[in-house]
Length: 208
Image (tube, rainbow, N blue to C red; front, side, top):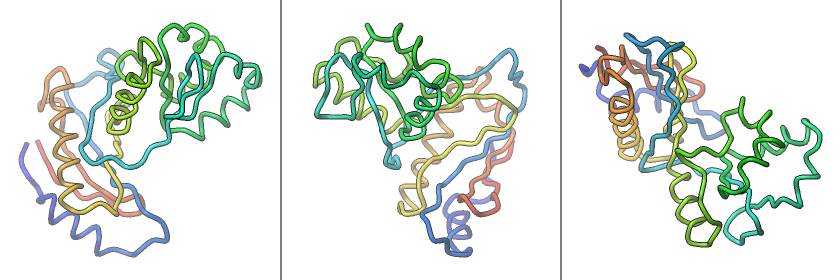
């Protein structure tokens, strides 16, 4: 991959644009090549060093002071699909204790699955809901970004514009490096990479 514009220069250009009344996300857009999304679907998590705050909820056998919790006794509150959708929109990630996964899939899977918010063996499921296990998983999820390929262009949120340029750059470099390792053909699966803020036009930073 060859640099088209240095990340620092791209961020400087993005920040020179119109100021918005909200904190914009920093998004990476990766256009893929040599990749068949029907046969090689990628569904994984990567971690970035400077994550944006995330709202996390946990399915646990008992309530925890560490995180918003849903126990088995609470499941009756979610008989209606609209109630599950409302819950799903409230949180970025869900974690769960392993023995409850069957019941979670039955009650919540029809909504959380399509929204890519079901607790996953890759990131989100703990064997036993001890404080130590919950704390470690929360720390992991706070830095995690879910990657799922559905088409030949992949958009990933890698931070917020209120981070420093150095932090955003580190997130971008970490994300690209992780994705190069995740794809079956590594760098050869990535055609080019753009960076943008929520309301800006994308700027190309890497080209095959």
